Image 1 (cartoon, rainbow over the protein chains, first blue to last red):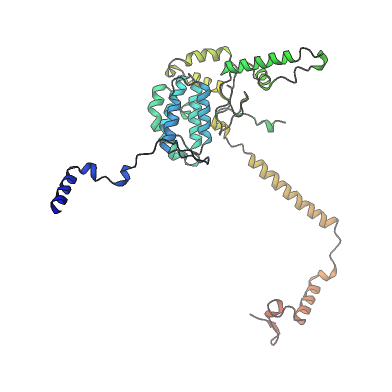
Image 2: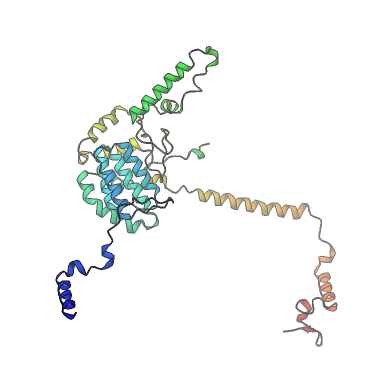
Length: 159
Length: 190
């Protein structure tokens, strides 16, 4: 009995990789959110969300209509877009040949930073700077649009 | 998408024409019943429709929570069309003025202009304070010209007499007024 047990032990040691696997590693990583849930609560992770929007902007056949739709949707969400989403969006603006859209997007993201603008916005600009230089997009600050340039009378104040 | 809009509005206009062909002309007020898309298309003129917008109608609005409106701001004039051709090329070749012109062609106000403080609070505060002081002046006038003089029982001597009467009557002796009065020594407790 002991001999058999020892032989077993040796073969175990040899095949250590196939035998001694922690139980949690045997569970395969879940497939991307194909689980049907009854509530509207999303089970998408942050990375999946980022990847989805990056892939959306990176479509080569995207047109201005879809770019604007995605940007408006992002503006409505409770988040600041990741730099990689921003880079994909700026490249999409380049593909549809719309410079003003790119600057507007930068202004919109800056506005999304809210009260923590001083922490978040410089970081975002730093991440996105290579793309800005490559495509030739000026930031709103460089264009002088961080301060009001023109004045528009409020229609309710016109008597 | 522009083509789709054009097709829909032309189709709708055609259907309207067909539907009203057999009505006597005095019953058709063609300006009133045109479909929504055609109505807007008439009003925006030469502006390019570039997106769905806030509610699907081709209108322009500046909102920080909806940064890309459905139409460009300015109509497509000749300068803007030439700028658009230049925009298809490398953007590094655009001058700052051209970049600004492109932005203003698509958008009316920048975010900074949208969010700029209006200073309205000063006029609101001033108006409130003026109203309050007016109220106080009205009260002064009322006291001087409207109200009767106060009865004599409000004079200081009469009030002192009433107060002494309250002490004599032992008003609220447990926790109130005369609980603080020392009756043995005829004075207030410390």
